[in-house]
Image 1 (cartoon, rainbow over the protein chains, first blue to last red):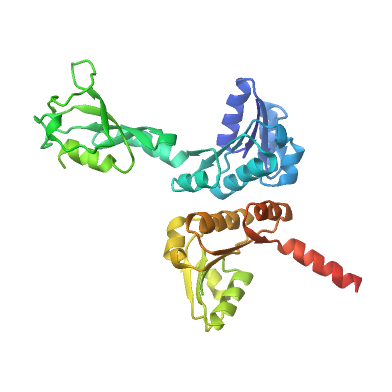
Image 2: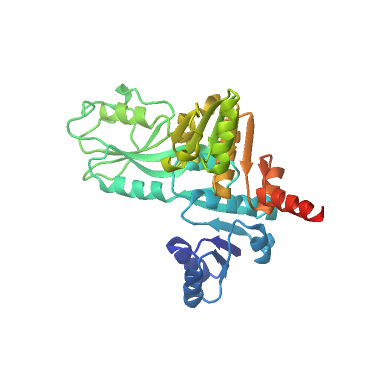
Length: 220
Length: 132
């Protein structure tokens, strides 16, 4: 595959290195001359000095035949415009933009960018998982369907401990998929499952009903 | 008319002054309060510290009730992004955007964003003057 990467910072450099190792044809666009030289020294002559938002530069590097276009500069607006120029002027089939402001995810989607990767959200999710008292952890987002997979821990002081699941008013959009309990094999909970302190529940839910799900399961 | 202007440079500040003098309701946004020194002393509109590519800042500036939005910061991409948010997220009826790069302006015009390139306009004007 021919892949164009805009931005030769740390993300752009390591991404290009990994994609080259997988055997793809890579071209990095980077404005800064020092950074440009560094990438060429390290990865071979795969880096061109130029602005990834400029149509003339993109034409020079053959964007018309690119299979994928990935913009990973540190500025959301630059990544947006680079991807839009690639998509609407050069018809690149797949555009991916890095975003730092998580709120831009919805905006970018509406403006035609195929995939967004929010570094801020990813870091937040990883830290959440490491905070043991955190009531709800995001494990995975299924973007196209507007669903997410979350983990909820039941603390010892929850009012729901000792109650069967059927007595809780769980939001209808949520499905409890797995119960992880100490010294037991993980299993699918049923309506008669009685909650215990320390239970971990993996559920499929929507972003809108995750709060209601957390409250129902923990009795908050 | 309620107008939100993003970018209080020379152009933004001047436009804000002109519209305000005619009785329009003007809110001007900039990421640096120092830029507001460019506004005329009797400017009666609102000068607001904020970033026009952030939804919250635009909401604070009253984008939801605005009749028009103008993006005139120094950065083409910032202007383009803000103009698209105003048009496609907040459905502002009139959106105008400055894009210095003529090729980029052409592309966004075809994508339905009303954009002007001072580069093209000024170069053309200079050429006409020289030919006189």
